[in-house]
Length: 66
Image (cartoon, rainbow, N blue to C red):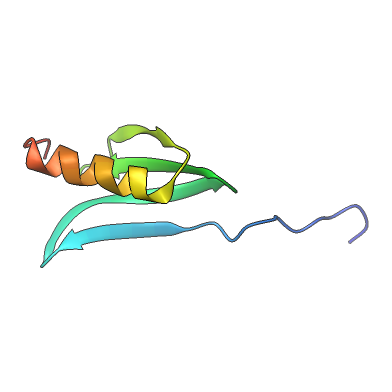
């Protein structure tokens, strides 16, 4: 297809679990941008690093944001 350029990244949509409990998920929105969501899919924030998105999910779980 003329004019079509594939994205520079493979989007990631990854769920985060602790045992059988779903803590949340993160979604790669751009090459260096990640959106984090809690277990109810409430947006926790937009982050530059994947590990920061995961930390936001863990912190939300630890603070009882369920």
